[in-house]
Length: 336
Image (cartoon, rainbow, N blue to C red; front, side):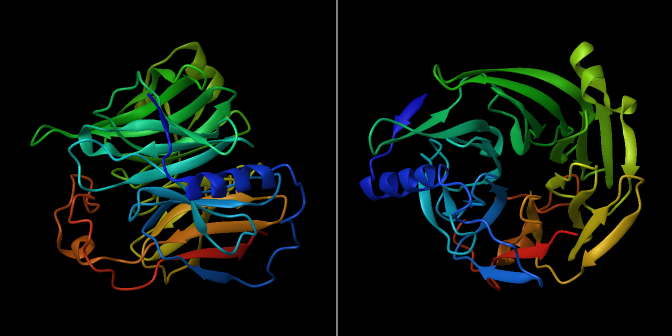
């Protein structure tokens, strides 16, 4: 389904970041020598960096929108996604830069509206928002990783009442022109996979319910999918990993524990980088500028008191207007 945005101001802003993508190097810099914290008036989840110009994008549950910082510092609203019929709450998970003119967003959907959503430039000053038809809307989508042109990997889980929760990793093949996508399961037998990242012919998945990071060969999955989770290799065991990022050499970054953030070397060695996060969520790398971006989402009252899902993480189903107990931030760390 293809929808045209009604807000001219948002369209103009969205067009501005696309134009900025052609100005390579405008936002490029040497990067901070010390960690920085950028306060954001948002309920952020996912984060992505456009390599060409260093622009940073985040998803915002508070406004069901994507915010952008072309200069990597000042975030403004780029595009507002249409609400899901019958739902009064939002949850946008990971987003990725599919190409300089297309963002892809995983919509959680709470069991009825899970989707892959594309945000692209249209004619003139209009934007085009596409909720790709085809993939199962009962799947609560979390992580995304670009595999190639027209292909993205998606982590998801399904939860219906008291029935056992189950999840997996799938390949979504999409056509931006037609607004359709197909889905092929790649790994099955997970309970709550969250993050997904790709490097050196391997796909990495953070298994929150199992407190571990897994990896599998992409060529093996392409040749014979789906595969059971038992075929994957355990890279590391950490408490509650979340969304995930990986460098070209296989170094991983993700949440670890309630307030921690960790680096996992290619050999599985785990190093805690920080232990003062409210709630580490999305992670993005800018290896060109040697920067690591991490979402630090402020806690809300319902994050503490609301029900949890079977994996132990708070089920994001509380009131959308619950008060925050702090300020959400985008943390910027030197990438060594």
